[in-house]
Image 1 (cartoon, helix red, strand yellow):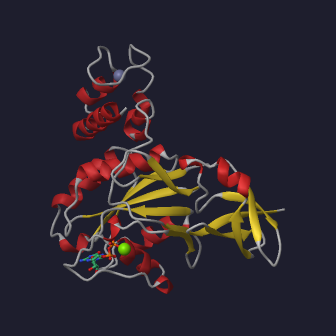
Image 2 (spheres, rainbow, N blue to C red):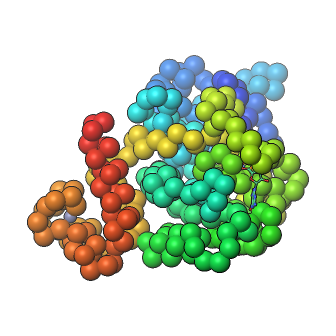
Length: 302
Ligand SMILES: Nc1nc2c(ncn2[C@@H]2O[C@H](COP(=O)(O)OP(=O)(O)O)[C@@H](O)[C@H]2O)c(=O)[nH]1
Ligand SMILES: [Mg+2]
Ligand SMILES: [Zn+2]
């Protein structure tokens, strides 16, 4: 029996990197396969035990509990589909222009990372496109004040790329963000050997809508791992519970557990510590409004 990590999933075939660095092809053991429901799929990042069968083939015998999960909504549905496990960071990428940033999308993606147990980070790319302060400064201030680590970058001018490189080399990450914001460009900039395809200007494809069948973990030169998984154009918050949601907003955390009611939803209850923090300027109103909107969506979908 050998321990390893799933580094590629194509259809029902798994590539597992063993502790000694060897890569082996493995299939799911029949019993394990049957036991796995929608949430129990084996995904890239999973820590597994493999055993040899014959002719250099292996089977995955068991899967360790997932430390973190990256989940997205299934097409048209509200069911979470786990696409990667055991990542450290969800790096949410937005561009300050072309396409313009949408705060609601950024907030939802940040929540998605925290809800899965990862640390969410924000990267504001294409800062070369905006003159002066404006939207970049506004977003930097907004998210820094919210306790979300933020970087300003440009894959064109090189601004912030050292810090971005440090971030992606510090662990295992996934990049999330709308198509065209520069995710592939940023990764290529810190590791040219990746050779990821970059879209031509003005040709924003709808690639994120495709159901990509393969996922993999990519090793970066100089350290770090990036998950290359199906796209995240659909910002699904399926799987985030109403109870967990407030904890996914870092700036809420100091105030949680201090409301009059133990099950306070922080909406219209009296003596709510979150409300008090909004009124005192400790929580920014736009972030609170986003919380309330997501809370409403969760309530509506059960
Ligand atoms: N001006 C500018 N353009 C960028 C920057 N980063 C990426 N782009 C361009 O934005 C487009 C989309 O980039 P791409 O990396 O494919 O985005 P992805 O869909 O998020 O992977 C391409 O035309 C890139 O050349 C940047 O920092 N500044
Ligand atoms: Mg790309
Ligand atoms: Zn409350």
